[in-house]
Image 1: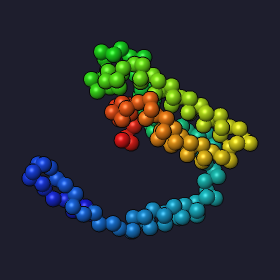
Image 2: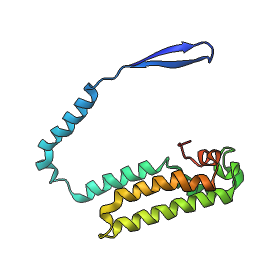
Image 3: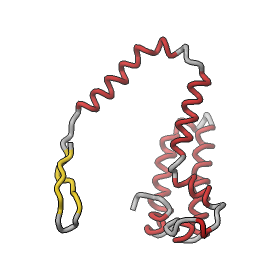
Image 4: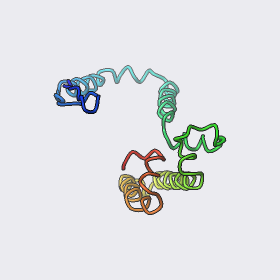
Length: 154
């Protein structure tokens, strides 16, 4: 569904045009709607099995998360880490500061969500995290440091 063209100047393939199709979206949503017919049989699946699936999926998603990798690597020797690792490029102090800010934000969001009186405003707190990223972090870190720390937003 993508038309590509070889560019001789850059010596690489470039995307010229992407043909959009709505068939895939339609089929995905039709299959999701089709699962409604299986709801009566799903009640026979034990809750521990469902919990195990969610634990597995959660663990699998944490594998490439830069936050967890940075916490794990903070206990490693600097020489054993790759040269482009944030601990080697910007230093321990900046890396730990960024990680501590992330831990504080995570703890704040978790506390906010656990309180039944404030849980309804949870989406607003997510918006507050975007404001922290946009206005607070650039005062503490340069864009190169944020990119090195795993923030894909330049």
